[in-house]
View 1 (spheres, one colour):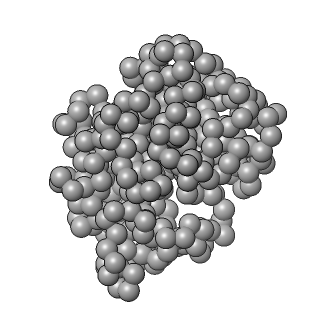
View 2: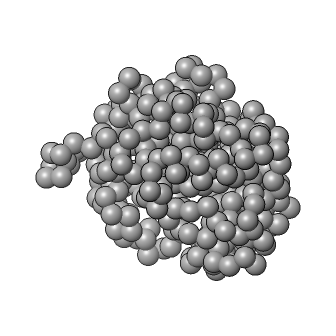
Length: 310
């Protein structure tokens, strides 16, 4: 959710790629995502892996085989500004790669950032015509259940068992507005979305338990949804459990500068073994905590970190 496709931001965040001779930044990210997928599926064969953005990586058969779908922000609305139509050439560029994913039999999830019901309706329609499943967000912060249209688009009472079955999804990442964890769970239980993308942690720092995740699966109409956990792998976040107090004064060599648009988020050399061990491969890693909490899959963000290094 953290990327806005503005040239000015790319310039601000860019680094000296000559400092990393011989590294194929795109392939390193493919390798990272594939390793995460292999580890997770060895633990749970049905575990779903969905990378968000960085869609250029999808022109690789091995990468496509490792993932179950992709997420894409701002395909039709929000590329330059929330509520503004994404330029046609940008949409066409992204669709070219998104269709590679769709034609490979994988699901495409699109999040557009809209400001009024008319735009939200158009976003739903345009994505459906492309064969994509979409969410029309009216808050960039992804901190609410949109009031419009008052129900899940293409709402249904089906119990969802695979990513291929979903017809809609809710992207609710920031749970700060909810007064308690149970209030958050109840708000989700009152909806009929086929899939929820949420955080592992509530705003008080406590992780959702396997029992609570199972409560999140229940639709209001009696069906069951998939519950997918967000995890950033291209930036370190200073509000996560793994953050060391010493890093506030002296950052690890694999940590880059702070993202000026998202305070507390730092680009990382994502191919570095120390960073990767924070994400997966051991019992204290982020992915292991997600697996232990019983989520149906993981939604990987900052896949496009390769652009920073390129």
